[in-house]
Length: 86
Image (spheres, rainbow, N blue to C red):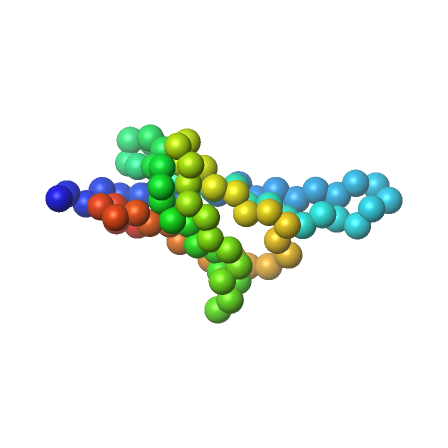
């Protein structure tokens, strides 16, 4: 089996409305192959320091979302059997 590379596109979103405290942060992730095609079924893990903040499996469009996160520096890892993370 030939291993293929995995690319990850991450969008950070935060929102706040006037008069209300800011809502939790959202992280949207799209996992792509080298041809920029989405990779379904990739496991995406999000850590904050040494604590697992969440994990999700990408859908058919290669997308996973983490919601209501507190502010901080997160590490993100994505993988799927047969692919090499880059």
